[in-house]
Amino acid sequence: MKLKKYDIAITKPWSKEIYDHNDEVLREVVDSIEKKWLVAYHDSENKYYIGSPRSCSPEFPDAEWSYEANAIMKDIQEAVLVTSYGSGFTMHSVHNDVLQELEVMAYWRAKEVAEDLSLLLSKEFIGLG
Image (cartoon, rainbow, N blue to C red; front, side, top):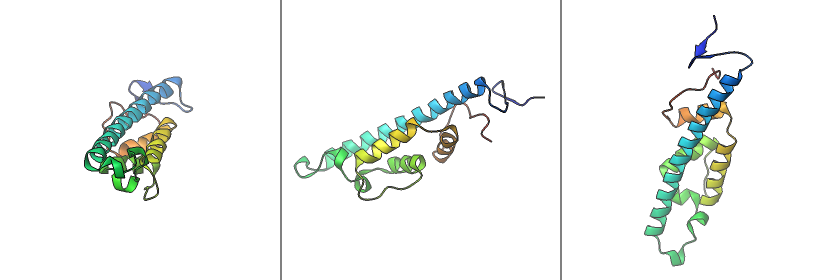
């Protein structure tokens, strides 16, 4: 008897159906993280421009990550990049690093990140243990 999940037979090597399913779940994970990231990024950006005189501050992308990132951004950044960024990094550089990592994220990493961030997904990955 073959094991099934979401009416897909779990096989080794993986079938096209498993890859297609996991591609959908991966897209959901990446889209969810990207949306949360962009909302948090823009919240931080709005707070930055409202709270500081522009004449004596750099533009937000050049602002110091360790001072301007909010808690949501830090949580996402640590989950996605597996490390904490401190002083010496700009908002722009961390923003790019997070988005680039999301673009190339493997199934197993997406599963870990989704668990780390407690994302509520419509389906789970298949075949990742």
